[in-house]
Length: 274
Length: 86
Image 1 (cartoon, rainbow over the protein chains, first blue to last red):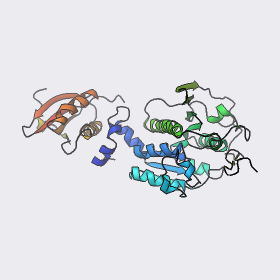
Image 2: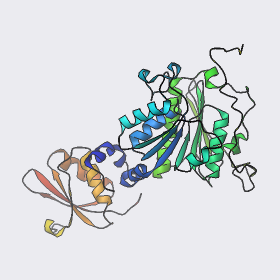
Image 3: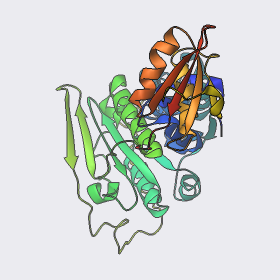
Image 4: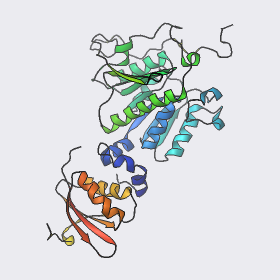
């Protein structure tokens, strides 16, 4: 594959980098990433990966754009309110870079579709806001031997880690099972700063770019946490769990599980559940 | 080194149709397609390209053998491709 002059210009700042170069840019153009969630985290990830020239980008979300999303989900605009998020996101991504193929999935991920969708991609981004989805993505990625980057954000805090098959722990090694219903507030209940999901989402995009190009080190075996109020980043080393239910040598989970959707049943119009 | 003749060099890259930083990018792409040790003549304009591109190529680990002034506002830079280290 030869670059056109337009491509050389578009990707010049990548190609100039010794760690990326021509090879790295070709890997990006031939690479594929699935972004689960076209929300706060998914927005910067999808925009940066489209801009970077990742050849095929899948984006999964069943929701429509809502006015309350726009404070942080910068891939959508006021004119997109009411539109399916994946359509709005795909339009922005194609406008940024017509070179890339965007595949929208306007559906919820669940045990019945997750394996089929995940298996078509080199790398997966967890940009979801609830624990059932996070465990579902983890298990599907472990079972299909697909690398992925987990992230979570709440209020002024965020975290991320990367799973690569055969290297370091998976999300379940660290977090075992979803917390009990109601034990942890969702960001709808707890609030979140828009720039927070921008910081953490951008770090996830960086992980995807590094995974595809082979540049540098990934957050495998490490959880990176960020506290915006104190400006502290911490990198916490995490071991693999030899008895992990999904990624150990003797797994008890051999297919994806649908946990009860506990987190996002909060109705903002009826906050006291009356 | 000084006796290398432009006619002896088969590999060519023309970067006169682009501007900075694509000049270097185009030269870099051409170099990456060669095998280590291969020679290439890179055709470039006077001014910014001839001031910056040879230095950037050198920093990438390639060897500059000769800069030929064509006396028409263009130059040909003869480069020996360095080893892969990435």
